[in-house]
Length: 261
Image 1 (spheres, rainbow, N blue to C red):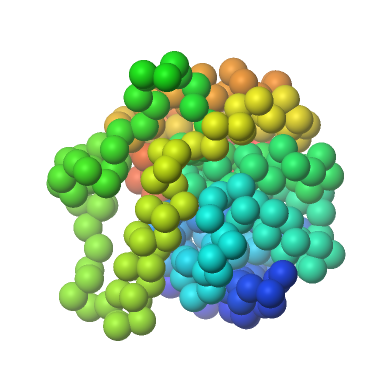
Image 2: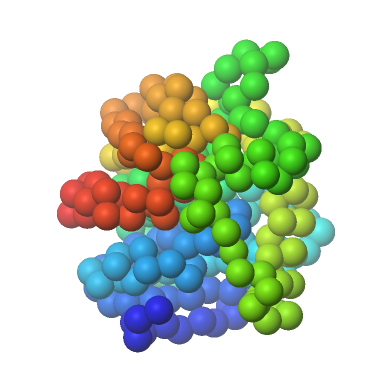
């Protein structure tokens, strides 16, 4: 980890304690991490923070953020994040949303035309594009973990996490993240049934980036999602699964910098 400036605060937002990290300097860029929070300790964010001040909230029940009973879905979380940006007096900023974070970005973008200047989604959940009996996403909770890892990662070596050397606090966060992901995204499975009909409200220029080898949500799903957002551009990254920004960071950063400007 570099010596990039990092400030982590607990903010009181609508009665909830929300953990928010701010990293780097420059124009603000909202980062909505994936359900495992894997971006937080990767060099990727430091690279982005060289030209932006990153605003990185941990969703309720993730990281150290509290999780009140009234938060029960990504739809609820999106309103809380809008309250956060109101609290920070920031709007018309770009956002990068990874996986679950992409879903949250979509929810926010349909609720406010003013909130995002650009929308960059990476292997996002959130919208059912297929029919009632079509499987849009593989079942990450009932498949064996080794099968899930093979679906998520092109290079399985990059999927390994050093749990043995984690602190008790770090391990507790891993467990909280898994529990909260299941709580918010199990029923309905990984989507908001109403979100598809709201995508017409998105006005920000949109780039959707997908790992060519994603077995959880395939590139075909990503293309279907892009087709539902007016003017959205779709790009794939080769030799990468559900987390292409972590498997092929240089390719992802080139796309991100070109899009964000």
